[in-house]
Length: 281
Image (tube, rainbow, N blue to C red):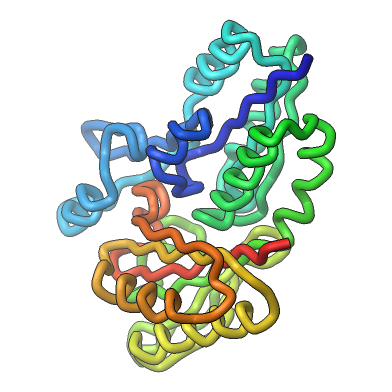
């Protein structure tokens, strides 16, 4: 009889409460300062990272090999036979490739590692959908067969105050416009089908940028029922205001609100407001 485990990395931004509720195994990224390092979400919070940016901008590293080994060994000891692991886009991190290599050491587990080609709660929505299907008793093959359609149903858009941190982290992707900061142009960034950042739109000023995010949500909701997540990076008031407007719209089946993980916040800096959409089947 199949016993299916679910693994994610900490960039998915699923809350610790939901991870525990659905028994989802977390692989934390590492937040690295000059003299210390932390396990993302477990040993350091987003606010701690933002509050210290003026002193030091840390680097990040993918989940450790030790954490991957420990997790897979634990699953074997708990009697799991199958594993579905869903990672951040392989174009933004080496987690997907590393987990593929480690999984070769565990032939006793039937492991499928899925490249979400996205990040934050876009990945999180896929993970939570998988958790629901596992709870419903679908087979491993049935769930794996649905992963690509799940990915097609999610999209992510976010606005940031500055491109400085994406540039420092080397994650600028196809985002254009080096003069954005000087001209007060706020790029709305999304992720393409290859899992790479690109500029979805350029808006003058953050107020208009937030209005654009609302219009993006309205367009999706005019086409189908959707789950909506609003996440922020040190931009609580703007994010709460956007969420309150979206909650009044038709076709919203559920909403999720939270902070992006420290591992993502390092690369986007303070002032981020993110809109993540999952179209319901």
